[in-house]
Length: 212
Ligand SMILES: C[S@@+](CC[C@H](N)C(=O)[O-])C[C@H]1O[C@@H](n2cnc3c(N)ncnc32)[C@H](O)[C@@H]1O
Image 1 (cartoon, rainbow, N blue to C red):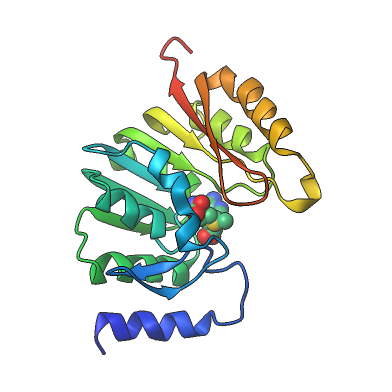
Image 2: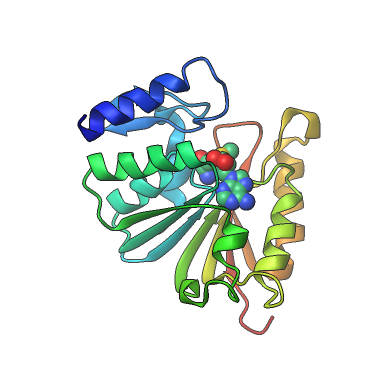
C-alpha cells in the first residue's frame, strides 16, 4: 500500500467522528479532509514567524500546522501528539508532502520534555506553538511547568499561544484578549496578535523575559 493510500485508509476511520482529526489534511493544495478548523480560515498561522526557525508544535494533531510551518520556511519542526493514530496520520502527511524537516513524536509533551528521562530532548527552540489545553486557563498550567526545571523544561525564546475558549467558558472576544494580555504577561512580554477563526479565540505572542 502506498503512503497516500495508507493515509486515505486512516482518514476513513475518522469519518463522522467529530473533533479527532481537528485540522484539515491538504496535499498539494487539495483538501482531502476538512477538520473543525477549515483550511480556508487558517490565517492564524500566518501570524507565526517561523522563517529559518526551529519550531515546536505542542499537540500537533494531524500535522496540518507542523507541515504549514515547514512550508512557510521553518528550518526544523518538532510536532508532538499523544494520540497514536493521529500521530501516525501526521507522520504520513509529512512523508507524502516530502517534508523531511518535520519530525513527529507520538506521546505527551510532558513525557517528551521530562529532562530526566530524555536529556537528549533539551533543545533550544526559537518558537513553541501551543493551542491545545482543555480550558483557556490551562495554558498557564503548561507554561508554569515549562518554566520550572523540576517539572518539564521547554527551552524557547518565543511562545505563540491560542488559549481555548470553549462555548461553556462563554468569554467574549474582548474578555479573552484582556485575559491573555494580563495573565500571560507574567511569562514575558505579551502581544495580542489577532482574533482567530473559532470560538472567540485570540492568538498571543510571548517573548520570554530571560530575567524571569
Ligand atoms: C484541539 S487539537 C489542536 C491542534 C493544533 N494545535 C491546532 O491548533 O490546530 C489538540 C491536540 O493536542 C493533543 N494533545 C492533548 N494533550 C496532549 C499532550 N499532553 N501531549 C501531546 N498532545 C496532546 C490532542 O490529542 C489533540 O490532537
